[in-house]
Amino acid sequence: MARCPICGEALKWEELIEQMLELENFSELLADKEAFISAFEGFVFTCPYCKEEFYGKHLEIKEAEKVFELLNDFKGGIDYENRKVKLKLTNLLALDVMLEEWDRRVKR
Ligand SMILES: [Zn+2]
Image (cartoon, rainbow, N blue to C red):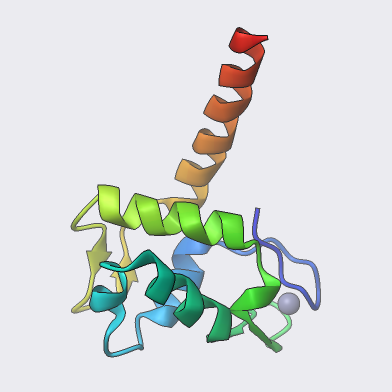
């Protein structure tokens, strides 16, 4: 789960990505994982709770990689016109983690 590195509040991935939608080339970034991750790491996010700013590199990069994959798996998950992420990224990530855990248990 993403947390604000300053106040520790849980952050929603869909809201984080919505902040990134102000990047003109966001849709192009989705075509290239490396470009996406480096843009993510260098992006200045604003925490909706404490209003402090922090770089994306202070968040879990592994989760950002999964978000990249989810956004590519579900084309149309972003409403560019209204700058809205329609995908429930936070829930999908939680589900993903749960399935991985389940997978590990089954293979044990
Ligand atoms: Zn905060």
